[in-house]
Length: 96
Ligand SMILES: [Zn+2]
Image (tube, rainbow, N blue to C red; front, side, top):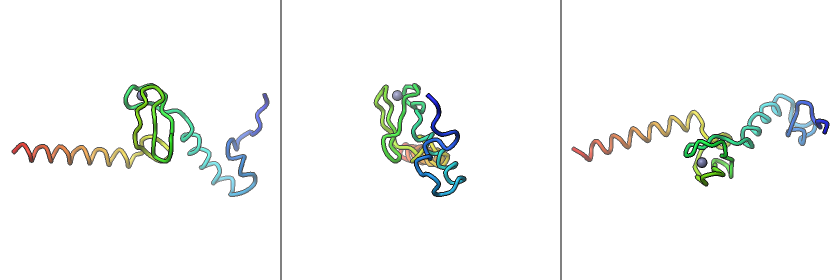
């Protein structure tokens, strides 16, 4: 098979519209959205995007909330850390 598109990939469907730089950026996002990612539970590379922010592992069927285009975002990681420390504080308080 010969390649249909040399560099535009899946953004070829937009034709000449929307500008090359924008399509280049979109291509990166779309590729990571469609790719399989590593599962946080069983560590196998079987996680796929189900919907916006919903990811599911095809091996252990774990579904989890994550980023819209990638399973874990930097800000999501920060939020998780904050939640964890708040929870620890709460437990600490209830022990006293
Ligand atoms: Zn899994």
